[in-house]
Image (cartoon, rainbow, N blue to C red; front, top):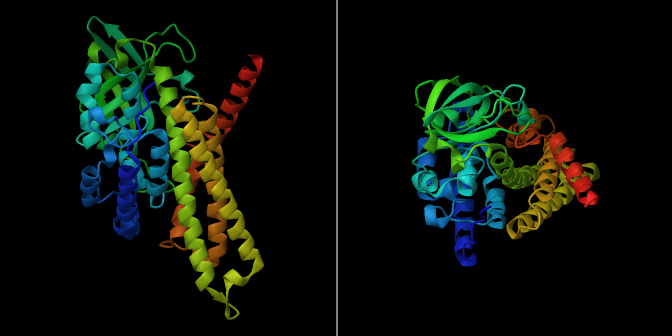
Length: 388
């Protein structure tokens, strides 16, 4: 599996500083507009392309920034400080969709697609989830039947991020109908405008307006055999799980950024809001919520960075990502709840940031593998290791 080489420390500091300034100066002031309009403004999209944000995790040889996993996590903590819809705009190019190509694509496929993903000319979507095949991809019903030099794809997908914005889909389908469970699954590159591809309107969700997910339908969609990722059948499940493992690291870091924003908002509110003529931050019960949130946030930050180092070094690419994603996403829920509580009645009001982040936080315990799935991954891997 490919791991990008680290960017020079000084160059990376400049990247972090630029992204931090961009988030604070350009994105945060537009958070309410993004929620109301349910879209990222065109000027932010254009500026994100210019900054290389569509390709930070894509190797430099294919036009990306080539950040390694530790740098990826550090960058994600900065991106997580604002509405998660902003990060979702280019998250699939760098993450679950792009990493399938980086790690499992043929050289021809990499040369053809990765430079376009890195520049933002093309947006890719990761089409894995189906009704009845979310946490368990073994229930996948989408099929790809080989017909001479082509494959015919039939089926549907759900909750596909950026589908309406994308030009290419990384579609997982069963190429061996006799295989059960996670066997017989392959991955294909499918043009979004290919005949037979249709999609529903983007979903109405609890939050994360501006991050669009949609249902996809494939009705006798014909693709050439050179669109089979890696050039071989039955590599799809492995590619998907490897991509999701790295994605879990990234999501844990986004959770850290979200929690940092909530804590900062809460501390500022506690220092300035008054009850009985004194700041509520002087009340010990409020102080207790602030202190507990800070401690959990520090723990999640340290865990994400530690897991990223192990992933980069190749010493652990399974336990660390799952543990980090499990803890950070659950931590975020607790910090968000305390943030609303510290704000009191104001925390329940629309336009107040902690209310918006409270709603956004709920999704992080579900996607890239639910908390329950992470617990199973951890336990099964530990038991497997004990057997050795």
